[in-house]
Image (cartoon, rainbow, N blue to C red):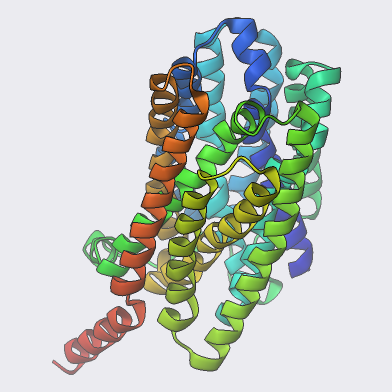
Length: 420
């Protein structure tokens, strides 16, 4: 049953990211229809994350109380209704309202799905399972790109949004019928989903302010910046800088996604093997994620030196695989710091990451527009900034994130209190 749960969560992630990315693929026709500038489009892209971050924190914490299955059901119903509202859009402000609402309902999905899958897999196998669920994001945002682009070209962007809303409705029906909140063995002796351990805020906030968790928030912010740039500006970059046709752009995105999702799962599998061997979060999770982020920053630097689409594709495959692995490897680190409230700590970490979604599109849109008619220069500046974030955060994370040491200190302190 647990692999069936993974398939459900994977498909939910596909829908989640297709909903995000379809606006990026429709950017040119939407901007033309509503006469939007790059700065205004950056505002539209940013608006998706205005409530995304807050909803991610509170929604995932709420899932600890009402159950992750119920929370996932509520979210997917919201996606279906909101995406179907594309036919009612009349201009910039209604587009912003729609994206804000969609962001609010999609914000809790990643931490809630990670929380849900953590109920079904032990720590030494968790990274690989999470990598499969997260792979749905790549499928929804990149691998399905040709279908999304074809839908926009043949039907128009509004019907394409509506089709995604209908798919969400189908997922909800099947999930209510077949989905389960947790394994049967964990249900024995319980009468409901409210089995969350009682913790005082005084026990929670030291974990949220600990060095390991702050380092997690730093690297998540940097890597999420890349994710948001890919969602909002990769299509325009490929069309206007690399000079691909719309269908070539779709195939480029599809190959990019299919390739780096496989590499991400390989990295996650290797990390799980390292953890089984060393039982060390630092060796198996931290160093793999941190060094990978730094290397991906260097690869993004190199992209600005050429317009060769083959090199750009290869560099982006490698860079995005290492960036994507961060979203997998931080989950076992964070849940080990606060196992009693997995939903809360995953929500806070995701919320910190999603802050990049608020400022990233605005900064990128302004940078590209400042370059004036030289759009290639503007996009290259945005890529250089992105690479710098990755390089710096990856190095800092590798040097200063030591979750094993932090956990040993907590255990030692608890033993002292019990003896006292």
